[in-house]
Length: 463
Image 1 (cartoon, rainbow, N blue to C red):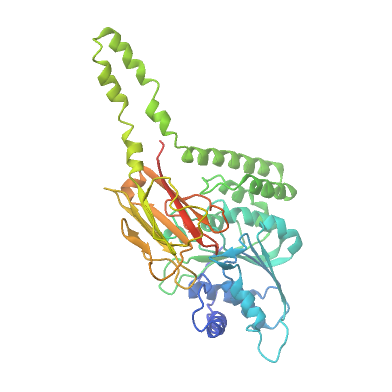
Image 2 (image 1 turned 135 degrees about the vertical axis):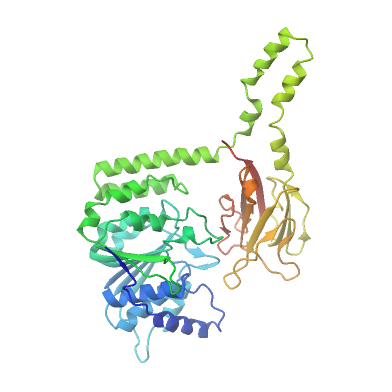
């Protein structure tokens, strides 16, 4: 049963904790709960209505939501235990959960003269949920699931937590409509939470339309026996094409965990969806331009040249030649970076490294050129300032003369070129490691390490 606008919104806990944090950060605190006020108040109200004793949060980021939830729990003046899990030990240059940690360590959650919290809170960082769920234990009666938003993402973690949830537990899903929000940080296929909300069978599903009457970006459901009896719906939802392919060791961790709690027929479905999605991802990432240039079947044309005079052989070659302009276009992409002390470096071409990797000079600005094509890019500064405005090539993104490092980047082509190329990019950090390749406006963060080089390349789309 779907219940619309039946949860009363309460914005006071968010206002209370954020005003405390802002006063201590001289109003420069950033990364408030990464939610709109109406979304935060939805969580606060659910907590007050259901008064849970054991809370699991999966997806922490800066910890603004964590601090807000702890404030609600403290206001209710009842014992509780809260467990916050995140794969990242750092987010955007700061320790994951730093806002909640600061609030606890500075007694912002406590009304004097109390000296202890009413409950307990623990972080579990740098590990997958299946690796820590046994330590957290069962009887969880409230969940906030807010992680990658791309399939398989939240579906994988819900299948892990379900055996540990108490009867009638509440599961809150953030960003259930992110794929419809035209947010430049996310793509139309950022629908993992919305897919989970649709697939799961539950006694009650809660939706509160936002103050403007728009479909909400946050939702919740209350599990019951039917959730367990129909869990194959979630396994079947995994069969939709994934946005990313987890690493092999991650797949093994999740599969081994599922094998403990789910029947063999569902494990078979999981194995098949991994296999099929692995093939899909492999096909998307295969470039193989050499094969399209060689095109072995077409040399049959020389057979005609044996019948005709030798000169027709030349036209036959010119028919094979057209694929070559595509690599020539790729080489026209070039970029130039500005680094501390040295200033602007030389222009480098497609797939080249912008600066010497052994030089510790921080990247501060970038220009990209792609003649007769459009490239858009934006750089990430810090938690306070976030992303720069989107720049169109060949203009500069970043700053010069301000000693201002950048800690992330995202790059995209215009709509026409995205049908021809993928644009891939990665950055080299002061710790002598490269980030993984990102592509087509996916955001790269250096996780607090300064960047001293970048590598960008175009790859022709394969059909």
